[in-house]
Length: 118
Image (cartoon, rainbow, N blue to C red; front, side, top):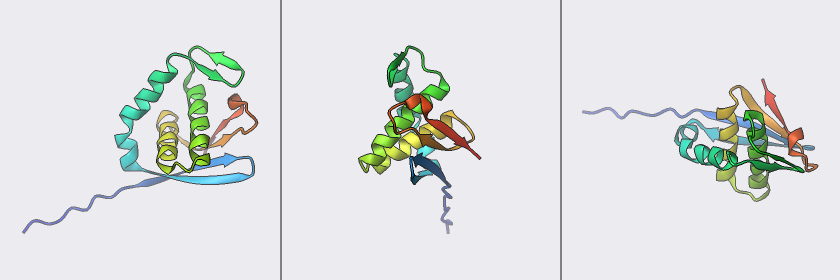
């Protein structure tokens, strides 16, 4: 008789600070493993440059890409789009190993958004 194999899925809790508000976005390990194509599409979009507040950045570096995605994460949270929020949090966690969260600048200056580390 075959034994059922139970897959253990680990979750990561990603902290999002926006002013006085603190959110927790749970990101399943399974999602991180399956989101590579989506994350590559984000990178491809940013490869063409990005308007970061008042400044156009022709070649965003890794930190700037995470700041851009943090802005998308904030939009996802504001719109109640949990799936998108998980994907955005997952992008930051994968692209910036050791990041446990993000402190998003809500004054309109995305360059002031900071990554949080343990």
